[in-house]
Length: 110
Length: 113
Image (cartoon, one colour):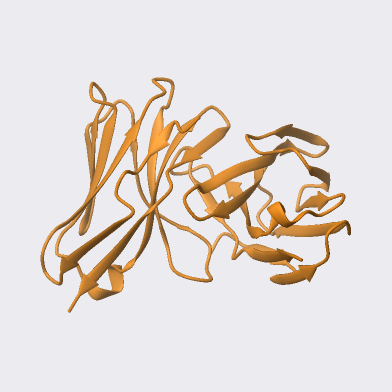
């Protein structure tokens, strides 16, 4: 029962360009959506979140967009930097629990 | 840094042996979580706790038990480890802000031979 899906296992972009990571969900009860970044041998680190009552949240180079009617969210990174290379997890929260997507590995080439 | 430590960081054990992983937090958070991370599955919730002695099951709880006798410690026990429990285990706490955000420990890599 995959309530949160990231359909692209990997993404490769050139340094300075935009990275767009996508996520779809099925449960209308989710009230917060989050993105986490994970480097090898480390725990996931919180990146940015958005409430279900908003459609956009921006923090520096990172912007998250939420389309509730399509049950879709995306993370935009502009401009992409080599240090952004990591696995990105999309997550959705309802009550006490969080569900995660399978992750997208982003590679930013110099 | 949410003040979360996990021990051990690495463990190799044999099928059928009991294993206990420890999560320790220093900031008095009420909610604590145990996840496992496997390729193609992201992070899946095993158990969580919403207070001392208050726990509930997650989506992959079979074969695992937990205990929380103090606010700062949340233990995950594999009563009889199996090879399917080879994974990376992460502990998390739920912070007040941003709402609903969880912060993760560094992880424990467990190998069951």
